Length: 400
Image 1 (cartoon, helix red, strand yellow):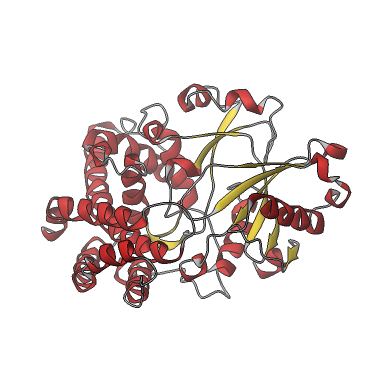
Image 2 (image 1 turned 135 degrees about the horizontal axis):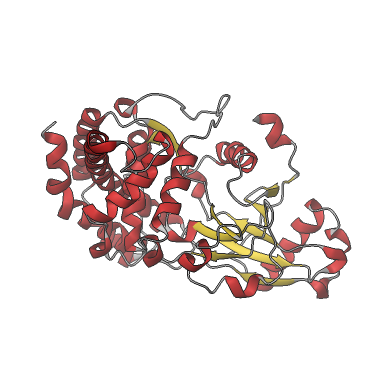
């Protein structure tokens, strides 16, 4: 993994996205000219920049050389301020290069001090309601199962790669973040200071203890998990090549995901953004994904019911077993139903863990992020949903 990572160009420059837009674009030009073959000849007037909508952690800008000398556009990702407190960027580099080899993610072209450059993929980005579309769900489920089976090698990094939920890395991460949160000061912002003072960190620690103790009863297998599979990280791309640039990329991106996926010879599903990816429990990735049906608005009335989950989990398990429900006779169907029920309970329990994970994450983002987003309100929404569903989702696990 180290040799692969070192084969990708690197520049020590940092891009400061807190300066004005023109200066940011000038810094992006410097990075592209320094790192990308042929870009040193691109004249200033040929550059076109546009911000790509995305998550709430980083800034993503499309840099387009307007076809100069046949060059294709790229996506320049600038990491959010202080996100290195939450994400090990060296581990992330190792992961990205390997995922590219296995056909996941946009191709990484270069790294700079606080970001990277990727191939720009014309794509249709899912919206939250499309994740629950019965015509789309099977594609996500099977793609996630394939992701969980990847032989990612993190040897030589601090990341853990083995174990069971009795030593689940996600709880270590949550505890580290909670300890970080306890040291935060919002003296610079009276409104944030007031909101933060209402957060009961001691109670949060006790909740994490209870969740970790209960998780040991499940023994959810450790997989290489995405950990942030929200709608904005699921793309539909042209199948014309491994990292395609569709000739008419501007039109298919507006079509419904289900319509595009109905012609698999032309379009395929792609996952992106692996900065939170790590070896952790299968259940965490499933529960976290189900939470994301709610979108950033946190409309948890959209959390999938048992029937919706069954469609997802049946397709997920089919990748492992090589068959769909109904292929094995009556006894086999009963076994499948039991597997799906157990996996649903596992996912629901870890949906609680996901609320805690992002609820604590948001406290740290509230202090350091320059992105205009109410992280403290988001944290409260996540903790509120954790409290609302905790007894319901914990009960089956306590009964084990």
